[in-house]
Image (cartoon, rainbow, N blue to C red; front, side, top):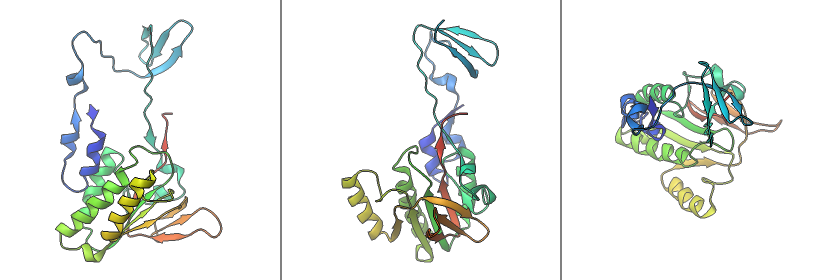
Length: 219
């Protein structure tokens, strides 16, 4: 199945369903293309050959490698202890579905979105999420009871200075707190806070943490 990953963002807010972001990969393969679903275990550049888990030997003239990436919440100390409870993500399909259930009954408290580290997929997605959260809680009539905070290792709301100034101004007008230059060291899910690296690290309290964990290459 092909996952339309940008659609994960809209699942927590009830705008998309799980079924809307899944389509069979074969629907996108044009005639004359052989589609092989297997796991690559070996690349032999000398003989221009790829070996697979199912024992195939695929010869090539040109090889294009698209490894993609995965989220690794286990890389942040304590994050897995609250995973699926008061710590969620929308960077996976299952995570987005679970977050939708958590947001459905969240009507007061502190919603914190944390970016663990740079780089990560889709740099604008965290801002899109907090803007959608602002809209979502306004629609439900509880925005005044919910604090929204974006905690980021970046010095500003976004990666590019001109865009960061404009988007930061939008955050201020929407009463979305930006906490910059925050390098996460630990998640304490039991007590509801994230803590910065270092002995004098800042703490940010949360009732619901939306995490963008480290993005790593495939194993």
